[in-house]
Image 1 (cartoon, helix red, strand yellow):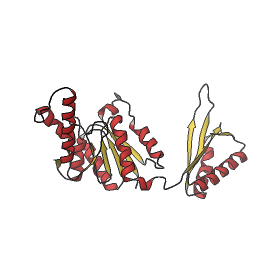
Image 2 (cartoon, rainbow, N blue to C red):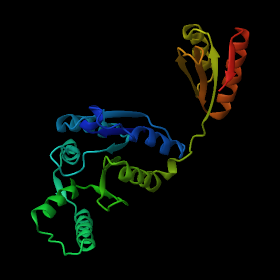
Image 3 (tube, helix red, strand yellow):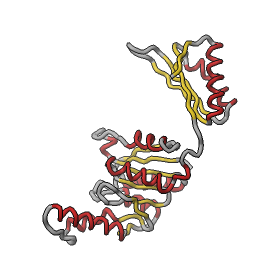
Image 4 (tube, rainbow, N blue to C red):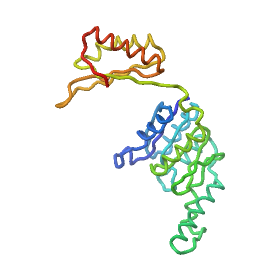
Length: 261
């Protein structure tokens, strides 16, 4: 079971807004000893969102989906989730209550009583229409809930709402997965070496130590930094330490210049 992230919104793909969800989700997962397996960015296209959700729902992965659950014409995620499951959208009773509670409170704060039957307030109830059988994800910012179906979790695109909602999902439903697999990472910077010349060593290390992965991040350098490769190992702590020691030994045998990261 991998953990996936879907980020939805034309404004992200057009560059009008810079995505903030990807680095934050990576960070919140790492704090719990977890890691992201994949991520996808989608525009506000109902057919494409539906097709993507059909595929990811069949995978069994844990999936966080940010954006598109409002009630404006460019919000398609709620309907797409229902379409992907082949079920209707239904008004969630508790979701409705939370929205109406919010409407009443805002009106009272403004010094008047709310008309829950006004066209505007009736339209707001669309934000509580979810795929049949969905459960709610509490929203501590304004009480307008997100929803979940199976192992898919749908939250708004606004970081101030989405991030605490995703943390609630992790801490409520997946605490048993936290820090279940100890991991370690070791890295160094190798100077003036061709990545192709180091590839056989990297392949041999992964074959010798099957519980680790070797990573290589080359840099062409600039006025302040020499050409180098950030080279390292990550994975099971015991094997990671042994693999890193072997990596350093082999670099020494090549008389390669390096320093620890």
